[in-house]
Image 1 (cartoon, rainbow, N blue to C red):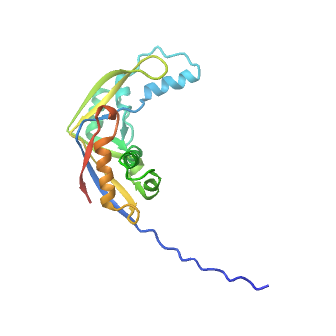
Image 2: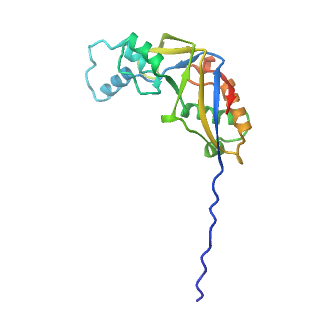
Image 3: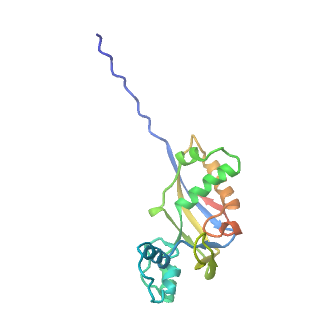
Length: 210
């Protein structure tokens, strides 16, 4: 029996392009992830631990309700927050941005599904975090009603005059740079980023591409 000859497979490199995209807020940005105080209470409840009678630290709730670019601050005080806002940087996430881009593709009829976009476009920021620059920060408190349980007091960090720059890697033969920028603008106009998006917060547009 004749031995079958081995085939030589040519490996072609993937042509990956990169660009830095700067977005600028058209409405205030609201940052509000689950903070450490609430997380601890939920963990203790699951472990059937008695709820602590010690008063929770207000500033810990405010500070840990945001992602921080250079690590979570350890000074949970008003002065600690002011220092962190000056020397560290609150962040939005690659995950949130990329998800909104995929949603924009489907909602605007660019494609039936977002799978092709997710397979060919990535965001490459350190730790998946995108630091924001801002002109003003304020704290807004409100009661939020979860699906189960009693209302919870949350601390919303609101930023005005904000902007952010993130890095996009993409395969140009699937989505061009121009198409991606258009998708980002559609996401910024109709979806936004951060909390309170259904109320119009976190809207933005592309200001610069490098």
